[in-house]
Image (cartoon, rainbow over all chains, first blue to last red):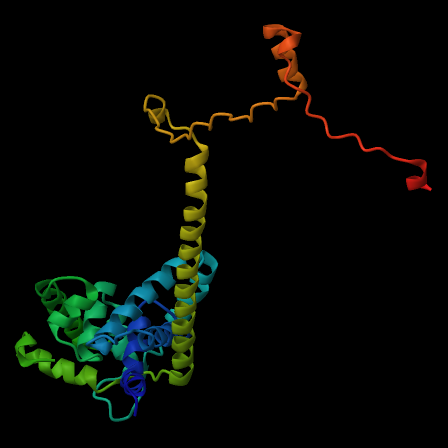
Length: 165
Length: 135
């Protein structure tokens, strides 16, 4: 297996996480396009980056933000409808938490807090690494993550409204 | 994710719960991406060659134009400077003296010394020709 194939395989295995990260700014189709373009950009790097996954996340982040800024107002309105569609996660019976509930809880967070959670939980990254991707210090990432988890806990532990009989 | 990154014990449970849900799958085309990457790299090489050629062409053109311009232009700094030019003096005209029997010499002799000073005539012998020689 060549280096390029190995690199492509590593990224394809992480494709779902990368798409979820891009979805913080974009709809599903655009997110997939951005990840695909980032993969093409990664494969054309000579020499390849030392940490291709971190490179991919950084590249996806930059491309998603640029893409979100560049689209017209009309397209933005259309896209916002697509973004709000509940399809970040795949519902599975063995999940410890309902996919839609988790997505709703995450949507309550600010973008800054949410991206830290996404990188930490679904990209399996350390706080220092997240700081390098997001462009902030480790302590800021730590604070954001702690705050985000606290908020999620409160949202998820909130009791369901009682049925009025 | 390292253990030292963990902030509170309850976070472990919440993290596990969140990790149990999988993000929606993404369809990536690694072959398509490799093709795009290859064409990008090739295009970059072509651009590099084009740039090098353009630079060489410009340098060549500049090298050709600048010397012509230099010889044609008179710079103000040249006004006061003296330029040494190696010039060969023309060789003196060494005409052959006119012959003793020439009109010029004969006239000069008559003017200076009189008619008696004329040199003896140097005429070829007159050959007697008879009519029988001709016919």
